[in-house]
Image 1 (spheres, helix red, strand yellow):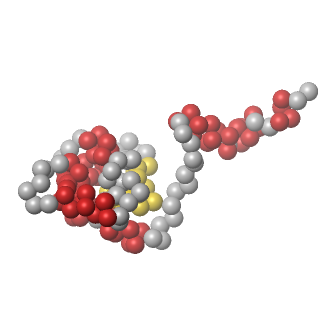
Image 2 (image 1 turned 90 degrees about the horizontal axis):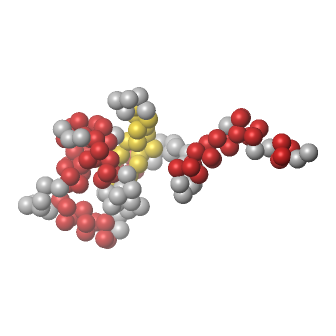
Length: 133
């Protein structure tokens, strides 16, 4: 953890600090070890959107934040894979987890195009011969 991340963590966790959602998420993960947004929300008896708004690309899970993506995936209630978060202090416990492939993109459309281009249909569509006479 960087010195600024450590300071932010100490401020959030200070006795008497406001009961923020961030603090509740951290305390939850101290107890349950790791969890998806849905599992954290269930434990805290909150709506999942209150959790994912603070876990994704927020201060809690940025490069040296309090949380990190373990690389594990568990199904959401809808059956879709969901990121499993843990406290950064437990990062070593997940060192052997194979991290999921990430496609670098700037927009959802770029991401969708990259997935399609990697498929058999996409490869056929993007063949140069198709566009030549």
